[in-house]
Amino acid sequence: MIIINTILNSAKIFGIFMIAQFIFGNINLYQAKYIQPTFKELAKYNFYFLIVYWIMNIVITMTFSYAINKYNLPVWVPNILYWGSAVIPLLILTYLWYGQLPTINQSIGMVFVMIGLVFVVWK
Image (cartoon, rainbow, N blue to C red; front, side):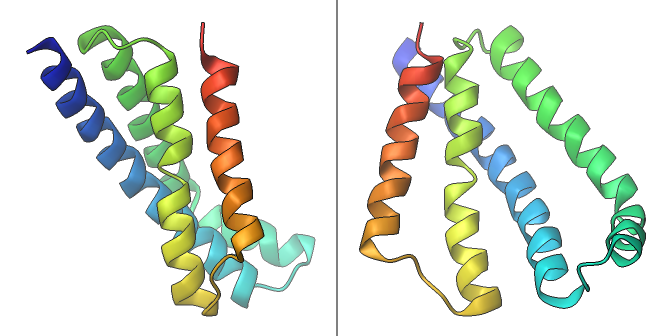
């Protein structure tokens, strides 16, 4: 029963992180595609999204807090879920915005990065 609860709680946390990554990903990819890379244009664009960045930061930090304090998950679990939740939106949004998919070498690299994150945060 403990394992099932841990999996369900991890799935909730992963879903929240993924929503946040989709929002950040859309903001960043729109910026990369349409905003000129000058200080003035980037500062103006980021100023418009300041409240969104602030809200998403609260969502992410609250999710970490719930994962560690309420669900009693080890610290490495929300870390892995957070970084892992960036991969799926990155793949989907990059395809939608630019029509590109990673090559096999890039895919293997992403897998190695995820494995590396497990080793980095493992106690």
